[in-house]
Image (tube, rainbow, N blue to C red; front, top):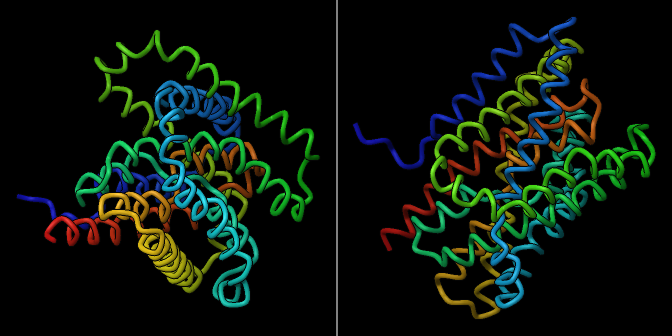
Length: 319
């Protein structure tokens, strides 16, 4: 039976299943302590793989097609955060304060790589430019997002000092990322031979981090603080952010005179957020009890962006 193109894929259902598992069987006691160390190792492995998969040519090409990439990055790191703050009077009444901080965190994340490239390919966009833009966004996100979060979110939560946060980010995120990128020539052949296996490792690590984050949040009373009305509010907020960002980036792409292929690349590169980067990064930037609440808006946005973007990609393909 052929899968309907705009339905979520199996990995999305696994994400939901992981949240359900953590809700009914959360990690606690010694198991939670052991899981914390395993999660730290999983995050280091994730960012090592991110660095190893970043083509050196993507950084070089990012300079040559700078107008397109500048437009996409402006949506990712400028328009989204501005929306999060400007729309606060509209957004916050739908949810509580912790979830609103999660929405702000979502707005500060880099773009996704896999789905942005896949959707660009389906819609007939500029795939090489999409690969370059998404990869460059990931690299910048590791550098920019922690500073945005530390300055605009964690400072209001009484978290660690800026110096301590930067040191922790460098050790757990940036150092593995740089090591992976520098060792890329030695792993290139291995990646080509074991691409599918590495994909399972990559996604499995994310599921593990999500289980750990939501377990700590559930033990801390997550579902006593969040109602179904707030979940519905998060879906509405995700829809507003997604549609406004698509209008912004696609409208400017037309105004700047980009061709159809580049407009498609801008649409799917600028209006998406990375779950693969956001979930592990939350473990470093926030406390264990807070991280589960913080990533909930990101997970719902991820689900919605897949459904709506897939529908748009199929429509563009038919055109």
